[in-house]
Image 1: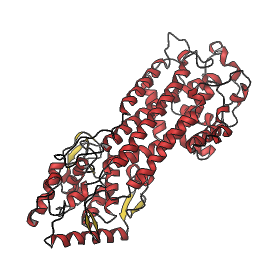
Image 2 (image 1 turned 90 degrees about the vertical axis):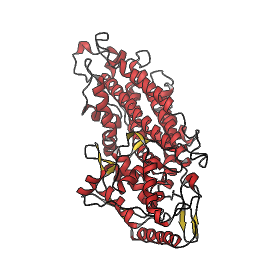
Image 3 (image 1 turned 120 degrees about the vertical axis):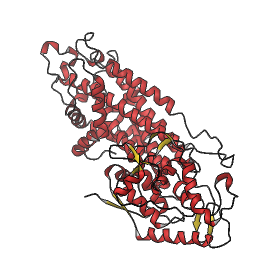
Image 4 (image 1 turned 90 degrees about the horizontal axis):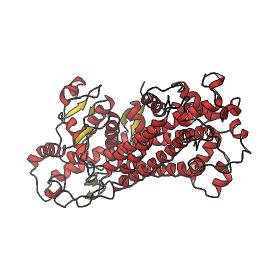
Length: 528
């Protein structure tokens, strides 16, 4: 039975957003949220029954802010608003992102500063709880006044127009789908078009899911880098707590703690303790410093996004003392941190690609065969997989150019500075997908290197490389052997060339399913 999340507008977390998006948790409003929504709506009705002119209630929008709208035309104004603003283009957002978007908009409305009717919010709950996902194109938002175009496509579903995604993620008309669930489209009333669209929920929905996944991926990056270290007979000395404590960045300390836990009781490391190699290359020695910095960027972004998802981001806002116009719809806080996350994730891939190169390069791997294959020449092994990793990190460099430093005025210069926050979040998502693939390639290469060291390739003794003989009877660190087993449960060792793309996809699925992390944490306890 699906779990139920109660929404109050103030206490939503990124992990809860993740669970609603991916695990289909049900959502309900608290009684306090219902009361706040109703109280806010009563203030809007008070304005409508007076001669007062208030932006967004009985005026036009943007540059038309000074145009008074007759009360008889206000409902038509809502429809016109949705039609004109629903101008997104490109591929649709995934249904998980759409689910997160709906949840975040509900939570913002639950704060009680938007002036929307309760029945509109309840209709959105019906969409979410029945997994009815509006078809929302990804492109078209400049991130201020909020995510107008994406959220207008969401609004179309409420009035029974536009399109939704069916269970096979195909684009279909909205009305027949609503009818299947006995949902009657609503007629929007004063202030409701703005209440639905003037917010940052598209960029923030993407941000939530990027951060939810990245929080787990950084731990898996620690595991994989430990595998690479053992495969290349590296040293654990650089991860000593004394080194971290004299430069006490929290992320660095956590990463080093993870590495020591994963590498605990390694016979590999003990076997070459006095081998004469003074220091490892930076891509091995500086894992705590680089992974730690990535971890802190993600943590900072989570702090900002946790505030954003519990904020009122539309305009105007309805207070007991009056109706105030402001700029909470501006996406700058999200835009800047998601640009930061893009840079951080790009660095996670950059250092992983350097470890991949060392693993496949016989002059850098401390004795592993060229491209991690036997019968080199006849077989190319993981030669071209490193090319793929190189292409992905290069693509990330272009994608990580900050979106938030750009601004193009809109609405006849009324909206003369915008955030481009949705672009920032979307780019971070694209980079995240690339990082998964780069780490998947490192996982494959590190696992292959370990199997050479362990002598577990199921080949005859004559084929076993001499340089690995002294490690055949040794055992890697506790976490490393668990991780290697997780890999081999899904992908066999590479004895001769096969379609590497298939292996990369399987390895990527291991990471996306969190199987690697789950297996390690079940045995070693939670990583930091």
